[in-house]
Image (cartoon, rainbow, N blue to C red; front, side, top):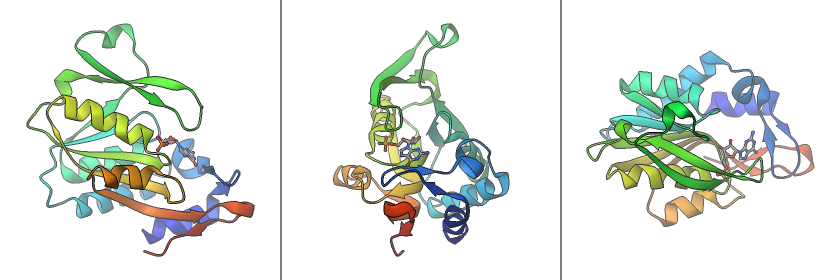
Length: 191
Ligand code: 5GP
């Protein structure tokens, strides 16, 4: 997606050769116009897949996912990274390794929000090793629902996530695929 790539080049910052910072338009401050266009792009790409729910992981996936769900006219389910007293009942959990924090967390779903008739589109901001996406897939499939695809804003194509998902048969749609982040430069793979 040209608009996203141009914005990454303008405002993204390669923190080191493995991590990209996009705090000024995705992760901390959010550009709603860009998020809306991202939502419409995902809705177009998955228009023929009979999607009944969009699922994301809190918190950075929420903004683009709201617009995706709105454009597809379906509900959005936000998987939680921690439980609270309000969430205690009827939950399903799976352990996920956090790429940025280097710790583990319990990805959590209230089971009433996904059922076996659902066809789910997963949306997340980044794809690195694919741990978050695979955790989401485990929770969704445990409900008997089908994952029709994984939509990613920024894929670091030099890391293993895309291959891990494709090897298991999942469709991955990344709007910007980064080939290289070394020396502070951001280089994309050709479309
Ligand atoms: P994965 O689970 O695919 O290994 O990592 C994806 C998750 O880690 C995303 O949900 C995202 O929050 C975070 N992440 C991975 N790489 C980056 C990065 O380069 N920059 C930022 N801001 N977040 C990242």
